[in-house]
Structures are given as C-alpha cells and as structure tokens.
Length: 639
Ligand code: SAH
View 1 (spheres, rainbow, N blue to C red):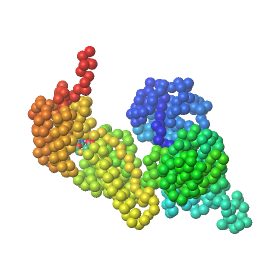
View 2: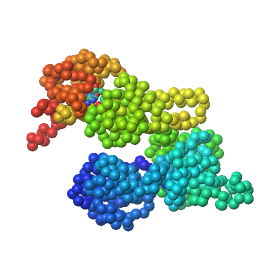
View 3: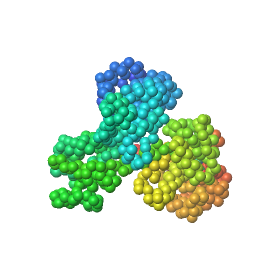
View 4: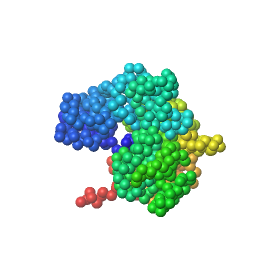
C-alpha cells in the first residue's frame, strides 16, 4: 500500500540504428547502470515488467504501437521517454510524474544540450503536481480517479484548497505539512479540494453545517469531488490465534478501523509479538499491503504500563497482552486511539504514530520535515578543471540557491555560479562556513557547500555532520529544560544533507602518473593544523613499515618544508632510496606539473600546498616516466 522508494530502479535504453546505439552509449555515461538493448518488439513486455524506465531512441510511432497493449496505470507503468537519434528532443511519453519520465527527459535534454518535450499541464503551467507532492510527503491518494479533475481545478483556478486535519499527520499540534504556494490552507473540510486526514470521513459524526446551519444537507454544502490524502500514521497492533487466515485478519482490521472512522489507507505499520511474526496469514496480510511488520519480545510488551492483562494470553505467549502494547511500542506513544477489539481469532488495537519513518527505516517524520526545511549538498568539484566535475555535482550546484565555499575552489568553477548567491570564506574558516550554510538552509533554501576533490576527503563533509550533531544535542538539551515532550519535533528545523562525491587529488594525481595505486595504499595528510605531529609520524612509520604505497596530502603544511623532509626520512628507514616517487602539482589545472623521481633525488622545493606526493611500495617501478605498482599479474603474463 505504501510506496517504498528503497528499491533499485532499472533503466533500459532501446535503439534500432547505429546512431541510436552511439547515443545510447553516450547516455550511459549519465546512467551507468542502464542496460542498452537492441530493439525487438518481443523483448519489450519483459522489460516493461521489471524496469522503472524505458528509453526508446526511435520514432515515437514505433514506441506508441509497441507499448499500447501494455499500458495499465500511471502508478505502475514504467517511465517512457522517446529520443530522436540526433538527441535533439527528449519526449516524456508515459508516467511523467510518478514514473519520473518528465525528470528523465529533462536530465537527458540537459546532458545532450537538446530540448525536453513535456506535456503534463501542471509542468507546462509551472504548477505543482499533486501526485508527486503527495508521494514526497508520504501521503496515499485514496481515489486516483479523482486526480484528473483535481488537477484541472488547479490548472483552471491556479490554486487548490487544502484542509489538513490538526495532528492528523502525526506532526504534533501546530505543526503542519508545508504547502506549495498554490495550495491554500483552509480551516475546515467542507470547502477543501484536498483533505489530509486519517479519518475515513473528515466530517466525523457531526454533520451540522457551520455555514447554513443544521438544516443544511451536507452533501449539497461541500465541494464536489474531494480528494482524500492519507498520512500513514496509524499502527495496528494485532494478536491472533495460530493459523488465522489472511482474510480473517484483514476483515478484523478493516472493521475495527471502519467502526472508529479511521482510514485503512492510513495504516503505516502493523505490530505483534515476535512468536506471531512468522504466522503465514499475518505475513501475507503485511505483504499484500506492503506494510512493515514490527515484532516485539514478551518482556518488551510486558514493560508497557496501563494495559489490561489477560491470563489466557500470558499462558500462550508469556506476554500479558499483545495488540495494545505492540501498537503503542511501534507507534512510539503511550496513548491508544482504539483500545483492544476482539474479533473472532483476532484482537486489534490502534495507535497514532508519534514519529513516522519510512520503510527504508531511516527517515523519521522529523527528517522528512527537514527536507522541506532546506537542503544541503556537500559537493566535491574534483581536482580543478570543469570536465572533471561529475554531472551529479553540476546538477546539485544547479539546483542550489546559495553556494558556500572557499575562494580558490569557487574560482575554479565560476562558470557554474552565474545567477547564484555566493558566500565565500577563507581557507581556515571551515566551521564558520558550515554554520553559515546550515543557517541559510534552515531558512528553507538549498545550499551547496563546495569542496575541491572529494568532499569527504580532508574536506567539509564530516564537519557538516559534526556541526549538525552538536547543534542537535545542544537543542535537545535546551528542549529537555523546557520539557518539550517530543524530541523529534525539536529537530524539525534541520536541513537534509546529501554528499555528492568528487574525484579526489589521489585519483587525479595517480592517473597523471600512470598506475601507482594498483595495490594497497595509505593516505596521510601532513597537516598538523588539526592532527598532532607525533600522530602523523606514527602513521607514516606504520604505513612505511607495512610497505603500503603512500599518498601524502597537504605536504607543505603551513608552507614549511620540514614536514615533507621528515616524512621522507621516516619512509627511507623502511624503503630503498631508489623507491619511485611521483609529485603532482595542480593536477588537472592549467599549470599542472608532473615529476617522477625517487626518494633519494626528490626535491622538496618541487612540493607545495597544491601538490600530492605518491611514494611507491617496494614493487613499484618506473617505465617510460610512468609510475606503476604491479598487482601480481606477473606470473599470468609470463604464461
Ligand atoms: N578534498 C580534497 C583534498 C583537500 S586537502 C581532495 O579530495 O582532493 C588539500 C590537499 O589536497 C592539497 O594540499 C594537495 O595535497 C591535495 N590537492 C588538492 N587538489 C590537488 C590538485 N589539483 N593536484 C594535486 N594535489 C591536490
């Protein structure tokens, strides 16, 4: 029932002509996992069944005729994009929103310098798409048939009225889902186009009309065709006898929810005792609706207080009760929405989730809110030149409102920064840079923090997480003093973070030198700004004695030659003076220099802070002024 985006998405690119094949190969550089398939109409049904996206490089007529018999539903059909073989147009044909064909077409067009052909009305009018918006907020659409008319209302009126029941989203009082500008929040369900509620009928029991008075027949006094969006914030705790069938379980759950005016589509998880976790009926029920099944041991269930105890249940399971405590534990709350209901072989209880998480198991409700609250990309821009920035890094920069970074790195990518707000700081002001980025993101903006090379290698990624973590614990401490009941809510304002990798100096330098990193290597920074020098010496000693190839970053820390000299001395204790050394300055930048030498002859004057130094292991050899570390293929080569 609930969407899970955890699964891998497969893409197939189908071609007919040689030019089509060439284009497919180019596209694969942006989608390295995509399969390239020669078009054969007989193959398409199986690709259709197990791929998330099909990209056809051929005439759209062929595509339409081929896929016509397979088209079923926009919720399940794969994205279909059609490209002409010159790559001038990328047409989003089917499953534009939920399937992602619109995004895919835009991505291809961006990469190929062509044009994306998008025909969905909301995109054309720059309006939000309801189905995508619902999915982003983990809201289930109840009546898909209503979507076209709701979409038409949005396009025609330029706005939709949305009613979100207070606390219905498990977000706590006063905390609401953020709405796009075109969605207007209304105070009651009656005049809403869209109703966000876990109650089956958001009007509840009372049907008295607040506008026209009690005589009003409610059906005529409300917007026709209201779309319900269901937050997955209900947990159903279930106890059952062995061998209870899936149908009986489903009936018990449905009838309990029905009689308490709760929506089945709002069930986000089910919960039980561990010994029932393998009940076939229960497992089949969970599988049928893609509901995560949370199980608890009897001692965990028995720790829940204020539950009515049953001797019979205790005898059978060792737990005093199952449905109620399981629901409470899985919901992270101490209040039941529906106390235990006995229905034949099944007992059912319902609780409201205090903190929601997705099936991926990591995103809490708090974290989801974070995504609406701003985003931080920590972007690695590679060693220097623009062609060594990954398409993903370019994309993240493009999507960001504000770019934060150190001057030199920003200069290297200045072509990508036109129209961006740029916050530049000095080299040693990393903490300040991080705090700035986080506070900008907390205003709801998308921020890219730029690091040269890879952002997780002696760069900004770790620091961003450290700053976020310490800010969180400070606020939690503060919150505890204020007796704020729900720790998740206190963290709502944190932006989400995505790390975009880059080509690190060691990759860039190694590629210029030949293949020095073919075997185990150790990477050591000679900067003692944050690491005590005696620790650095210890690591040099260990790496040298273990015959690792050694990569030295920051080899002229504070500009002093002492560090690289000392490193050389330590390594010389364990390696021959003839050991190969590569010195790469400004790899992939305009004034790049590459020196291949050895430990004895290396000149420290060739080393500066833009340099990476690679020291070979005992097997590394120099050939044609290239530095190569053998991997052990020698014997095979001789045969
Ligand atoms: N995050 C960066 C490393 C930052 S530490 C990365 O992944 O590459 C800075 C050090 O990286 C420099 O002192 C130098 O040793 C190395 N470095 C960065 N860019 C380089 C380049 N283009 N050529 C050679 N070394 C480089």
